[in-house]
Length: 632
Image 1: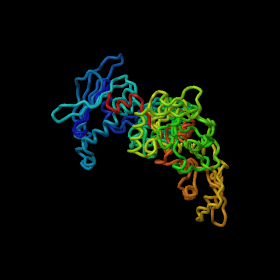
Image 2: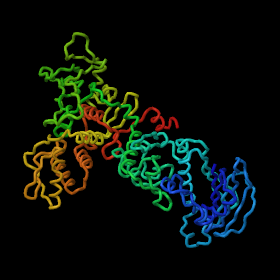
Image 3: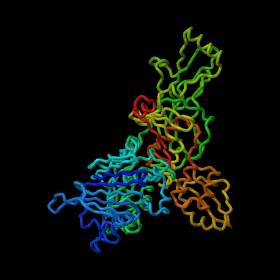
């Protein structure tokens, strides 16, 4: 057990006590003498350093700038407790020593720190800041040594002390993290443990949805040593790539264990930095280990394969009200309509007859009674792009059930006249007088559209798709982020390779000399994306562009690529998918939303867009109850 007390942030008193084996009386004077201690007994020990330090200069350095006392009771050879001994030093000079009262272990007290070095004293921060730094360091040390108990207290000039931190001996790492990290993060922690190339990486990683804007909860250890290493941090960030934005940081505690001969710890005075003999092996081990922990509960609930679309009646808006879509925008969804209209209101003068229409392969106008028919299915008017990831063709026709209130008797023709009662006639006449606008069945009144075990409930703010999953949880899906992920996955699989849409007039861009060299280097990559480009007399001619882009978007993308703003292929894919995806505020018909959802469900890593923003939010019954303050 290690007990630490700090008064006035450490400037008044630093007291550290343990119950360990102690320091032998004859070695206590050496412990506070410069260049007299070392943990290295042989050259082999220098090659395989497993302790936090090896020079033994900490106590002499502290004793030289403070009023210092050391009391220790060392165990004897037979395991018994020896006589305790005490030493006092003032700014490096021994002023007294003699027997002391101590059962076991060691006690070190430091008072008036930097009193003889005012130039150094003025660079100390406020007592609160210095105490916080000491608390953070002790916490990280406690996580590295879970078998050892730790206690931290803050004292005052009156002698009172307040306990700020306590870790009991024998706790596991997760329990100790629960002391310092909030419950929300603890619930999102997932364990990982993997070994590659002789390097073991284990610990805990939080799911991306609880990311924060600071990196202070990324804790890195190498062979039990607290380190700050850019290579390890890069591996952790790479594991979250595509799941977090560039400004967000995850919560991870990572322990790397490897042969001590493969890591150099003597590269920083504080031993906080290390160097690896094989950085790529360490990077790979950490990357794969952390990635294994990032499968979200939503991904598990969605499953590996998307179910087929089971369409139920939902009113389809008029095609003329919908914005045009580019060629191949929906893949196989453009083949046939998914839904048909349920009701059509009679235009008869008396207004008291409603017609219930059963589905037919191709609805035709009824010239005799003037009834309205279902609008034609939405078509993009352009040939489609290749389907992504084995998209199954959607059903060409839908069985439209009739509501019980308007269900015809057996052996009745598809169009049935239902005469209203006198009371109903009066109600209809009053409604027509007050509100002459045509009556239609609202989307929310119909049975939800089913996509396997998922129910599509509608669209909110023309941006978010509302879905209920098989467990009854509520899902909000960002249509732009979801479509971005679909297009990005297609590009990575080469689905658009060689399938660009030809332009009647080539898209011409004048090139700067520096852009010409980059254009030559990018020619093959652009062809992989669906561009057909050629260079001619200092200009770039694009004869075809990807099917998901219009002319202006293709021009902007080419300018970004030629300017070098997207250096890697993945960055170019992300930019292209972002420009080609549907935008926020764009209204989707139910069949279009169903097509997007089906393709999104078939896409890997679908919880996040390629930029790392969340594509879906999920609330189960417990989460909704907490939102409504029904429970804590």
